[in-house]
Length: 87
Image (cartoon, rainbow, N blue to C red; front, top):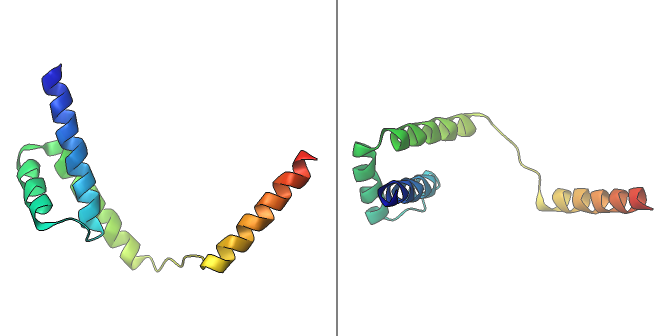
């Protein structure tokens, strides 16, 4: 059971580095360790592959995010509506 926990921890760390790498936040050493892990772990290779596909799709999706002011107005309106509903 201890070996299984170590494997899960290694995969957890690898997935975290994969996510960091996706946003260009992973260090060189982390990327090297990730690539070594991916050589031996099929599940993490699949996770990494899916992450890459998702990133490509998001770059080509032309998604527009709300501006900070719009988010704040929405939050205020939601809070106000919740308070009105509770009364």
